Image 1 (tube, rainbow, N blue to C red):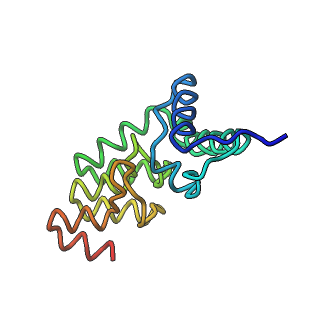
Image 2: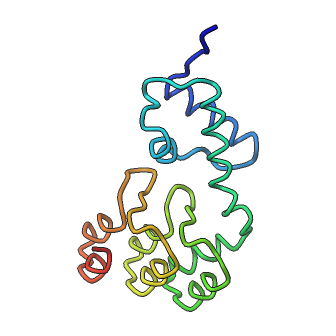
Length: 154
């Protein structure tokens, strides 16, 4: 028998529902796009489950770090390099994504070169993208006219 195929909209709807049922934030559109570029042509239920399991695995690092994620986000937003450095030295994942926004993108939004450097040194992916618009840290820095940050991100 041929296995049923799900459209990308149905897949995303299903994954979002599963994430909400497990008390997690809704699936970021960027996650699906990055993991399954061919999703527009439809995927099988097995592939959908595999994608969801990948999503769960990608959120485990953030969940295991508990409430520290909020503190790290606040440190970035407040340009608190010392608090951020302490979190990174304590093993916080520099590739963490908060509500669809990678930490390095938050640093670019804050415009702080020192904070961005700490994240990059800790392994933040320089090509990370915001889920809402696929903007990279470099695009964010250039749009804000922050030449020093843009040069760091080149």
